[in-house]
Amino acid sequence: MKLQPEYYDYILKGTKRIEIRLFDEKRQHIKLGDTIKFLKEPELTEFFKVKVVGLLRYNSFQEMFKDFDITILADKKMTKEDLLHVLEEFYSKEKQKQYGVLGIKIELI
Image (cartoon, rainbow, N blue to C red; front, side, top):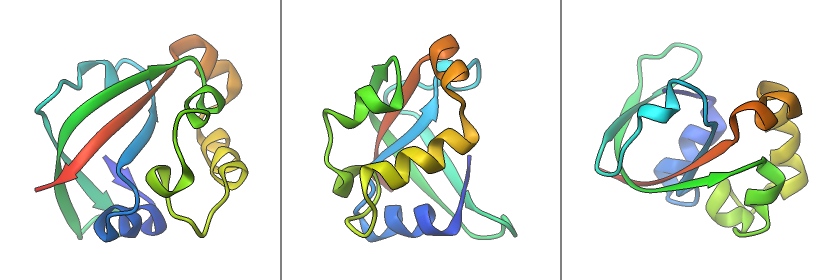
């Protein structure tokens, strides 16, 4: 999976422990114990791997945000509103309604 530099760094720092994605066809194949390789955009030459330790299904990002602090979803430099705005640039409310969303609990390996 590709990550923007800011979120890539948050995972490496250990603040971002849940990767947030649309629960589309691609993400429906993710299982507990899987290994995911994250590539840093835009060059895609830097990467790290994580182990999937939890899968969290929600109807929308807003619903997910009620259960978790920003310090687990991104970093304390951001607000939940900031993160929601970024996510909705990639995944419209219509797409969220169509597929639902997935929180992928991860650990660096």
